[in-house]
Amino acid sequence: MIGNPHPGDLRRALGGGVLTLDVEDIRRLLPHEPPMLMVDKVLTLSPGRHGVGIKAVSGNEYGLHTLRHGFVFPSTLALEGLAQLAALVLICPENGVIPKDDAPRARGSIAAIRSLEMHREMTEAEIIHLDINIAKRLDPYVRVEGEASIGGDRYVNAVFDLAVSLET
Amino acid sequence: MSADGEALKNDIKAMILRRLRIEDLMPGDIEDDAPLFGEGLGLDSVDALELVVGLEQEFGVIIADAEVGRTAFASINALVTFVEEKRA
Image (cartoon, rainbow over all chains, first blue to last red; front, side, top):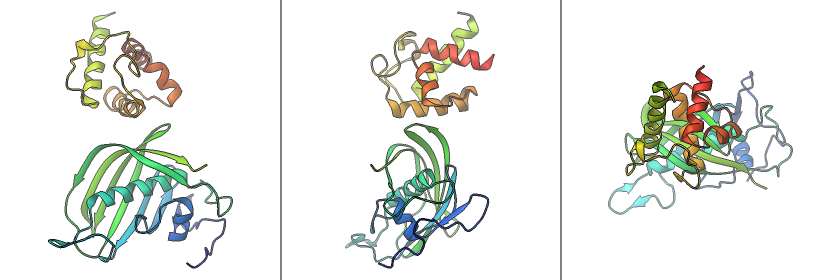
C-alpha cells in the first residue's frame, strides 16, 4: 500500500469547512477494510451534517457471484455504505485535522432501520452515489436519512439510526 | 387536567404506539404515571430517538439533548407537561 501522502491532515479542498476525503483518509477514520469498505471517496463532507461519496463496484467482488444469477451486488451493502459515510460525517473533525495516524477511529453499528426502499438491482460494474444527511442526534444515537443512486436513478433510500463511538 | 390536556395525552399515547409499532396495546392501556423506559412500557434508548423525532414532527416540540429527554420521558404525565410548557 502506498503511504498516506497527507499525514495528519485530511484533505480540505472546497473551503467553507467542506472537506473531501480520499480512500487513505477514509481508512484512517474507519476500521473497515476491503471488501467491506463501502466508501471509496468522499466528494463533499460538512462535519456533523451532510456527506456525499461514491462506491465503485467492479463486478469482480469476491463472493458476490452466484451460479444461477451471475454477479449480484446486494442492496444491503449500499445501506452499509450509507452508514459508513454517516460515520465519517459524524467523526470527521471540523478543522479537517486529526492528531496522528493512529488516532481513534469510528466504531459504529446500525441500531434501527426505520424505512428501507430498494428500487433496482445491481448486476454489473457501476458507481454508487451516496448521499446522507444527519437528521437528529440524541446521544449515543443519530438519525440518518440517506439515498444511494446509480447514474441519477434511485437505488436505495433509507432512514436509519446509527450508534457511533470512537475506538478506545 | 383540562379537556385539551386529556386530548393531548391521548394524542401522545397514540403517537408512541404508532411510531414504535406497538400493536398489542391501545392508548388507554398506557398508565399515565408509569415509567416509559425500563419498567412500565419497557421502551429502550433506541426508541427514545424515534420518540424525539415524533415529538418534533407531530407536536413541534424539540428535545435538545439526552438530559432533557430523561426528564420529559419520565412518564406520560411528564411528557404532557413538557409539551404544554414548550407550547405555552
